[in-house]
Amino acid sequence: MTTTTIAGHDVDVNEEGFLTQPAQWDETIAPELAKLIGLELTDAHWTLIRFLRDDYAVQGETATLRRVSTQTGTPVKELFGLFPGKPAKKMAYVSGLPKPKGCV
Amino acid sequence: MSATDTTPDAVPAAPVVAPMIVPSFDNPSSEGRKLAIICSKGSLDMAYPGLILANAALGEGIETHVFFTFWGFDMINKKTMDDLKFSFVGNTAMHPPGHSGMGIHHMLGALPGATAAATAMLKKQIAEQNVPEVPEFLELLSASGAHLWACRMSADMNHLTEDDLYEGVEAIISASDFIELTEGAQLLFI
Image 1 (cartoon, rainbow over the protein chains, first blue to last red):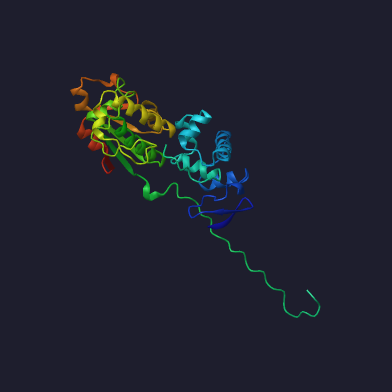
Image 2: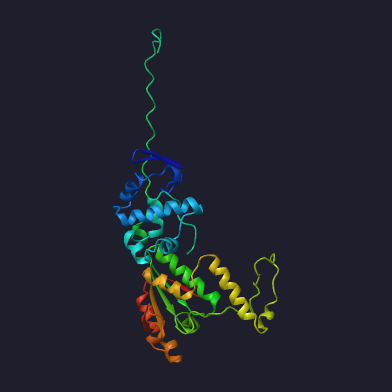
């Protein structure tokens, strides 16, 4: 476990760089995390990030790509467009959450 | 600090600045990775491994090709894709949930109604995991950028054309076409 500073906040991250304490995240951190992986956040990104945060608070685990798609009504194709390559992991990273555990 | 204290001010220890760790989402070493999955079975239980692995690969940004052949054709045939069945005849690993590991003799699966009951049970278990049924799963794969291919010989044997197949299937192609277009891919035969 390492502590690092993002957007003026000290945050704990794991060996991959994911935040390990979701409570250390706030909305000022997301744009910095996004920048680190080459993304600039738009309203569409924010809708998903806020869903992920709210869903995590209720479910206690990070939503899978399919869950994000079905619960927010966002087509999977669009998710791949907003978070190219590895959308589920990128969304989790920017939202300060662990990688999703579910298979589907 | 008191006036009598002659020691110099303690220099605060420099904070340990950890280098920023950023996940390697776009690791160049995995660029160009390709996965080919051959789905050759048409039973409900054997349809899912290919679908789940294809979905996982797509979520990792891997170019994924799925080839449906022989019984696997039932997974993309519009008439059968929604009605795959599970029989436990010959399956000695049949442990119904809630039976503390006690198995059911597999030959009981040959009794009338056993396949329907086993299928209903498996479908329920799959739905409980929030995993979609086969047609919706194929849609998920297509939307995620999967390349779905149908086997030419299987189509000809069953007198089926592209009109009979799930719309997301790109084309009916020969085995050699599939081998050619999956050059360099890792391969799974299911």
